[in-house]
Image (cartoon, rainbow, N blue to C red; front, side, top):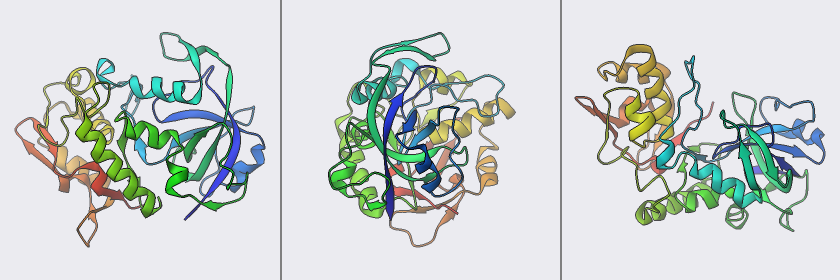
Length: 292
């Protein structure tokens, strides 16, 4: 699969970036029209939101069923991925207000590029994120095969290597890149960097014990994909996990598991619930979500 290289600038003032989402303005906004999928939603300047491909950061402001936003444990890494992403891109002295909207940064913009693969349901561009100039073998606005070397020059890979984010793979993401990122994930989990997710994660081994919403917003770090579903379920129905498998089954999300031929529908197939404790029975890098 090819991706679309687009040169431009990153600007974070008046936005709420997190560890896997930020704003990007192409040098030529007309290139947004060449990104496959839904039309990229743009602001009056022509900037669009980037959802970073193949990674998932801890939630810093998740709305879901609302009405109030919730977040994952801020003192256990939820802000670490955002801090490192902005530093890696070249932003310093980032000032945020109480709602975590950026009010000032040095510099105001930084040059960079994206390798766009498509769009998501929220009309965000799904892409690999690079800083500075495009690699010399890529041309602005001309689709190209993205190699492992290109991948290793992106923030997506950097954050995964640092153990600051989880992987999340979709079926359209090139298999060669996926295998490289899966191996990067395994090394990061083994290293357990103290500021990363793997030093605190309870998703896959110990499991998360759910007594109230604060169990996952303040005290326990779990896979963001599972967090979003649990947070919505708790806000709708309370902390009991009795009906949670049925809730997951209702989403009917299709995915593939490494080593298995047939796809599965619904995350209930890979969660284990014992009383009020839930854990996933397969590591996230072994899961590929099937895109329709």
